[in-house]
Length: 440
Image 1 (tube, rainbow, N blue to C red):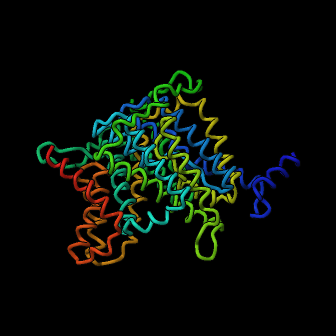
Image 2 (image 1 turned 90 degrees about the horizontal axis):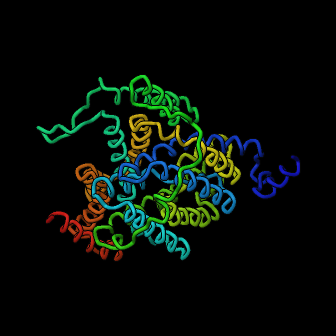
Image 3 (image 1 turned 90 degrees about the vertical axis):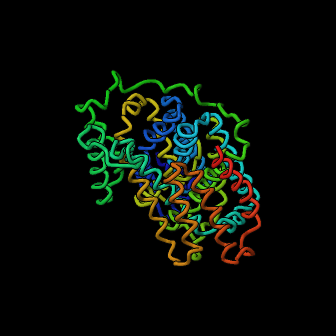
């Protein structure tokens, strides 16, 4: 045992970062508890678009385990990796369910964005992209998809409904079982989060699912243990023929932006929390987590899961003392152990996962508060992206509209020369995308 601890100390530089094996393993358990709800939520979102939920669950667990191991062993950083809710919403809800795009084409779009992310990472061109995208759009991205995710959770729970007479959203029937169990789960999660208890979202889902048993929404399986579901229905189902179209361009950017800025924000913010950044707030060796994330975003769709990225839930592990790659490696082992508990995960109804979507969505809305400028040229593009996302019920349409509004507003304000040439070029196909959408 002492030799094993000594090996881990050398491999993960535990002493250099003033941590221990037990502390890192505790942090790994904490990270696992904080992110375990994704094992339920991600497949539920993807199954909305017709993907086999059992296969998607197996694929999600494998992506989380393999990505976290790669982050731990290669980058030696305390970040767990997995599919983000945003990418799963784009693929399962927006593309497959609402736009009726086959999920194989959606996976190809996600993989294309991953390849773009990898190229930019390997060439060191990511700084150019960061400079090209307007800061208003960066700040609006989180709020746009956060609003979309929160509304999705409310709809899944039955808290909101479409009033056919007024053609507007209205409150749902809160006497029905769906809203009842969703509110129970939401109350549990909020109470635990307020007390900074790890695993709050997972606990909310669990309590909501248990409350759904007497209400007839949760149907327990005969056995909670089984062999993992086969990956055949989702693995290697990538169709690039439909991915290289103008209509797919906003979604390529949506996947890319989610992966790119999520990785950048997560690594810098959580790296600073772990004391791993320098005096200027930069993370030494940041190209390593970027490479791991780009690999997860590229190879994940081949397995059947879009948009692998460093997860914000990693903050829970860092809060528990995680400082090295041993934290995500420990979490990865725990993720793999859940492969034998898939029947229990699949028994959880969408009303029970709704609190997770609502809380995650609301937390993402906070990014808009950093937009402190009162200039219309700054506020209008971000708010246009948020409003278009809500009106069109499409995140891809929202981000495309936000970029176009930014270009138009800058031109009207006499600041055309300040627009990056790359953004000007991009606005041409995006404008055509809106033209074709309006004429069909």
